[in-house]
Length: 169
Ligand code: NI
Image 1 (cartoon, rainbow, N blue to C red):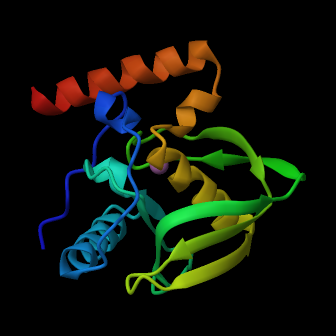
Image 2 (cartoon, rainbow, N blue to C red):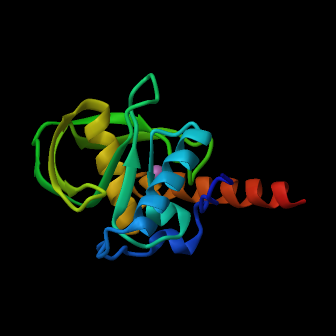
């Protein structure tokens, strides 16, 4: 499979708000599989459909060290988030080479559907909880650099635009 193209910050399409997934069919399964392969290929731990220019509420995640525990969350909703937060370093496949601290809840409970349209409840903490929050932000058009200061964000934007230009040159 050819990996899907991952949109790069500051591509305006990353700001799109995704709509709920409505049909649990072969197309959805194919998309989820393609996203997982793209994520593994890019050595990422999560990918939101928004990042591959599909604006539906679907995220894929694998935070396991063995890279064999894929999670597909469809129409995810955070139903509880811990008051306790922590600042952890994050990166993003749409902002390659940039890592910075973001404050997130240390634990979240998430309701989502699986590829068969069945309800699942994920009681998560640590890296998985952080990854889910990061990926769900993408579905509402938010990239993690938006949590950083305007100055940092401006520097990152300039760096990304230069990186893309250099690759095309
Ligand atoms: Ni990301």
